[in-house]
Length: 345
Image (cartoon, rainbow, N blue to C red):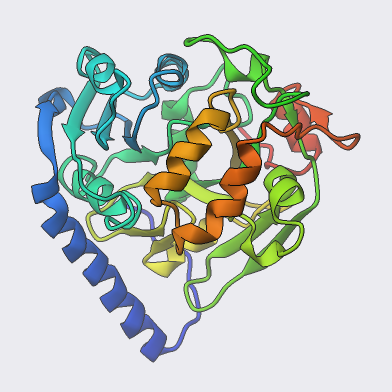
């Protein structure tokens, strides 16, 4: 099927040339990284031409995996292409036994692989060409208008009918009320049951040159951990669902893409483009013990040592709730708050 044309973006020929070579370098890195991946279970021969696939890199997510898979199966993901980055908690064994999971293992550096993007892009090149492809982390749950009755097949058909190649989302941090290590969570449980609170505002939106990607910041993590330097707070915009082509490449997680026109498909909270929300379930009770491990591993974005204060604070099991916290009630609430755009089905 011929892909719809991308929206136009005005950039100089010099910028366009630099971005074209940046994309080619990213694709070349991905090609070279194929040697890092060892097949554990390969079920890709069962992927049908119109299947929606999810691509994931993870490490030690056995607690989240049962509900994560259930959530995306319900939304219509046909197969999960997963890179396991040397888990030792049973995640790999669990995933290898799933009939709709193809699994690769690597012990290579997550940081050195562009935080997993090199590995995931190689899988997308090989198995996601022409498919609607969902790239999410194990702690992200995509929700959108009408998702209780309309799955991703229906969403992507609607997007294609509009001539749209992708679907953006705000990453929204969920958290419990009380110390982070005091709520009880069992594998398979909906994380929203134990951590239903979020910050409805403020969120700042800036569009950056030359790629035209958004930079959305704000919310709970900024309030809790970055109040002394807001510039370092996490980037919250993502474009996790894209009609994939081998010439595409994510640049920084799913925050930005090349070619740059793809970045115009999402205009952030309060914007007019169709969008959803990625419910970020990072703050399950295990985050407290995991923080010390992640501080030691030094695999975080940019300069890992800059995140030491963040991990130190998490290790104290802080209470993220405050009087401005709002309890999650559903997608209509998120639409009313302007955090995602209602879809005109």
